[in-house]
Length: 260
Image (cartoon, rainbow, N blue to C red; front, side, top):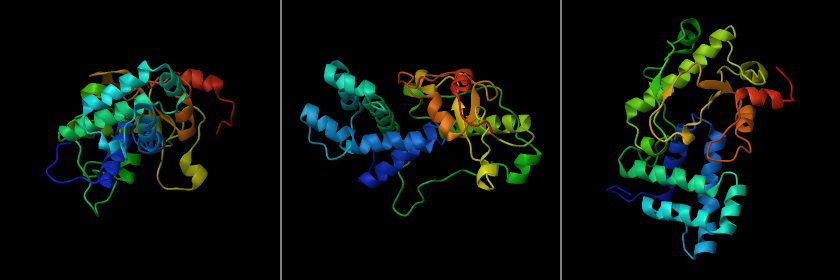
């Protein structure tokens, strides 16, 4: 990995976590699931089936080697079957790790230094709570969302634009519900249920970016939708991997819980 100073595994772990959470729009459960598999499941699996001696996945520093292991897993019937039944899939975890390594080597992924806060948010252009409630930010109709192989080294300005896109989605749906931001499947309202000040919500991509390699336009009103963590998890549940998901309409048909 391109760096003039030794990088500790702890720093790499923190950087990988930050990378995943950004790619999954703050969906910490999904990001942490991939990180857990990457750090504690994949290395012993590779050692057992391929005779390697990795103490950590971070011992793998070449993207070609990472991709070679993905192909070898797919080529072995036993491993391919295990991979198909794993959640998250080993090949998916290795894909995200490969993209992370490429971002590191391209200098597009900062490495946290000891003592630095793990999560940093650029609030310079973010509206205050009062501003957000009284004057919602303009809806960004279309923008370019880079992901997959083409997006591993997104410039900082593009990442900021994508965060604004997420906020535009939240602001749009808030106006539909009289200032409330709720799950569009079950109607769960975090502020009311937990008596908290912030309107926590996850934003779901109706057309998952992991299925699109390269550039594609994203509309904040039609391509994104707010969901609670449970519904967000279920919309992706058992949909064949590779980021596949059911439609919001299909999720609503399957939902049998309380409508808040």
